[in-house]
Length: 248
Length: 238
Image (cartoon, rainbow over all chains, first blue to last red; front, side, top):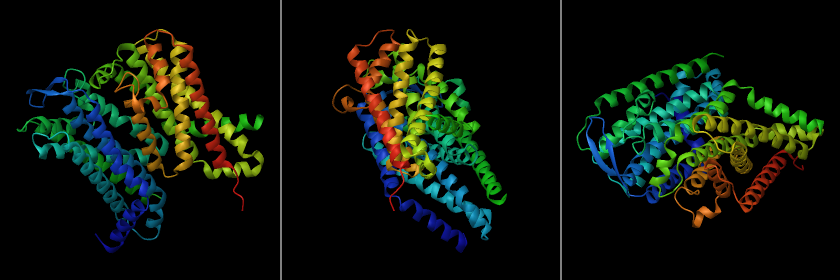
């Protein structure tokens, strides 16, 4: 990264750090959502189906703890992506006019988005670990990270195409409907319905549920689906932003 | 009066001019009601609650309307501060600007509530549509008040959106039929509205005490919204 891009990145972080309420919310919301969800859920037995077809008997309390992490991370990353990119579109055109290349203007915004997603993910995992320990951490963390990155990219796309208000409406509901309902093994028969496989949360959720309740790993297909979503969305975000910043 | 009506209509047009925003206002509550109708009863049971069947579906419609209305209230204040002040200074006055904003917000809340009710009617049926519509609209109006209050205190869109979401999730999770009915649940803004909506979903009437309580809460929320709009529109003394 050259000097201009690293200065823009530093300024991007400073812009976020100047808003103390945002930091409080990014730490406080995961803490409250996840710890409270676990605390108020009954430990009733629940049979779920993992990606390899294996059936596991767990409890609603453990399931709620595990599934609240990607819901929270997806929800927060989506809103951060939306507003970071809106802000970029409003101000970074001036950077481009002043001589930055579109890539130099976009990279700092994506680094801020990635960092905020990692903060939310770290806090969410730490809070969850107080009450629930996944069977295998690596796939659990990977699944949640993918959920955050995918929804961060969807938020960025919404910010660039739908606008602030429509994007906020979308990012309020989409993670809840996708990860919170369609992929959630607390509902239906413990496995996602057929139509849920077409939603962006399918791959990440299957991967993290495998990590949460199994020490083996039979979710390679779901992992590939998640990576394909992430790659496609990342390309779309970069192309759209480059075009928006360079086009005027 | 004409100025209030004209401005209210223009505020409404401003909001609905973006086709995608209008599409989200119609599609999202419908989608949420459809998808959540089949799972909210299970969710309530997992939390130790008792709401089920049509009552749970009705509660989902109220939540969808509330969440959208909260975001709507927030952005109405947060994004219009400068314009409203100029409008007030240009001769309309802060009170009339606030009245026009309230009128536009109520109209949008009605639109969201109609969509939620129609979806509810088509997906699971409603025994008493006027009763259910009133309860869903009350959810939306209470959240217009909450959203505008947040918007009057916080101008940053990300911080404001997260704050509205924070209030909503605590309210929804601790509401009647969900995790409990004691302690903090008693203080939640839509507590009585949820009682009325659950009763409507089950095809039962609500006691007059509940209607009075939701009427007062809604009036208080709209008063709060009017105050927030007035405060953001009033000219600053130099």
